[in-house]
Length: 486
Ligand code: NAD
Ligand code: 6OD
Image (cartoon, rainbow, N blue to C red; front, side):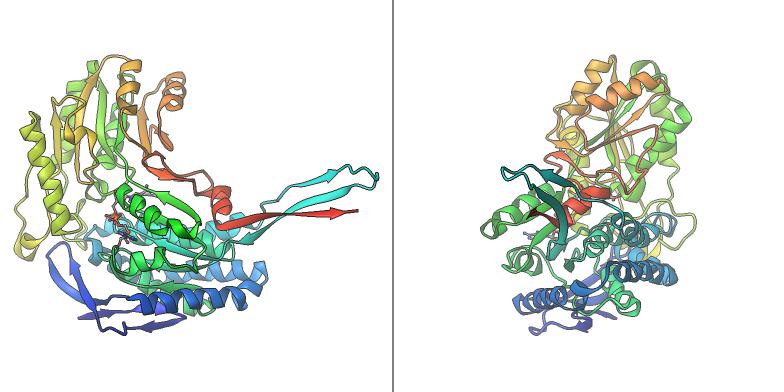
């Protein structure tokens, strides 16, 4: 049984309290290992190590050397690709076909892209006239923000954690990471890669545990951290703001979504089906950017629905290492119960069940896993629970619409504002509708096509701030002005 420890000051350490929790395979619910749970003592040690590293070699290192080390981290992940792949798939149950294309390559890219990007971003300068006629020169410089607390979720563990750690380190910060209790493996494995790449001790620290009254809360309420970057549920974001309010520091929050896809009659149907199939069902629907509301223009509604249904019914549920598997399980029994409760609610509220709606029969050990069927409903009003609340499962409601104004109003009628997809071959319409949708990112004729130079984040209850490109630089650095009287 694997023992998963904290990674503090360059070393793997257990908890002083001896407290541990189980590492579970969601595909079978078999226990794979034990994870040490951090108490206040381990969190203090990790934050102290991160502060010391900031004042020590990392803080003093020439930028070119720091960036070269981050390239080595990326190369180190790629060199151990299969280990990262297995670790991620065991923790999440996701198929290797998905993790080998998205999770692991992006985990590596997050270090290279931000190291390359930040080298060449200028700051501003101004000449100021002064009464004595000699003037003053103002210029801005960037300093690392300090110790960054990174709190990450379980759905894309390595990708979403390194999406924060990559830019944080590129800017010269140090980090203490608290991965989700469900998915501790890849974050821990990265500690080995950090050491091999020559990252100084204390720059990258990992503590394991839960949220309230555990590692998450101890970290976000710690007085010696300088910023919190969090990805997870909206209500957890609210709890973190409340609990850490006394310490006044910047937060960057990527939260929940209830994302629409808008499919116009002039779309390329093949592209729209392929894209919507991915946006609804990829990662068993556990992608914050995923579609849970599909709006289809009435003339193509029946054809679209029948093709999406056929494609959903063709999804292969199975083990992560089976090349035929296109969908894994949900992350936990608790999450399975939550998704199934929404499946029941949809029927109670009068949905037409087009496909799915229950638990599939799975063979052998998989029968004990957290499986649910890919599910499609129609016929609900826009006020229905499954049309309003984030489910985070492989399901969607498909609704016909008759006009652009109507569909824009429906798409925006949500407390969230993370992502949207628009399917149309009419370029003017694409731009017009994209501009009107209240979402941090609008994909036109695509989904989850990422350019790491662009702003990423959510409006309304979907987040606070933007990361990506220079926007990450804004969050992970303090900009200061130097005014020189000439
Ligand atoms: P979660 O909020 O339950 O947990 C996220 C992390 O926060 C975990 O590490 C957890 O241990 C920690 N945590 C929980 N309570 C805490 C507390 N009180 N103090 C400090 N830390 C605490 O989220 P999840 O279930 O892991 O992930 C699914 C959710 O995340 C969905 O709502 C999804 O939409 C959202 N998400 C958003 C994005 C985005 O980019 N906007 C990306 C991925 C996931
Ligand atoms: O691609 C990214 O950078 C990103 N933050 C994706 C978020 C996915 C949510 O599940």
